[in-house]
Image (cartoon, rainbow, N blue to C red; front, side):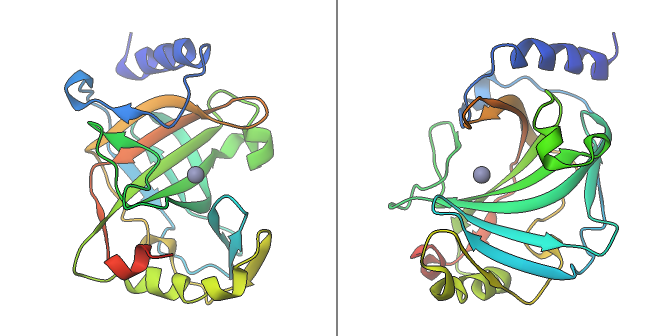
Length: 217
Ligand SMILES: [Zn+2]
């Protein structure tokens, strides 16, 4: 059995149990895998429009491209996963991230939502075990500011109420999502909706820098 087949086999087994996400990643229990590198395409393209939306539960960045949206492939995947949106998750304390690594949480966590190209749309992809891919970025307090996060946060005053959105000046999503090739955690979990929806999670070990002011949201 090839590494890829073994993976698919493993994923099918795990999906039948629908492990709850988020989880704590226990590094010493993680199994090391050798996979092809992840390949990122079109993440440098400037979207045509970009909205920032307050869903009431999370902050969502929604870019729209005129054709050719960004997509990722490689790693455990032999097909394209199309970029769809970014979620921001934080909490009332400095340990606001959803996932943790060896029980350590970070102030902020970004989810880059992707769906499998062959299912054409996010809603259709949700119905398949291999339909959704969420890339996770942890953000930690550092002295260097992220100018892109500044730009987003300056708009928050316009969307204080749940279910409101604001148009923002488009920028390439790679300004937020640093493309990585390897050195990540991979697990098969889910998202909590009315019925648990299977999700492949990839968590980069590269931490994104934010300033203390940026988490006082
Ligand atoms: Zn999320």
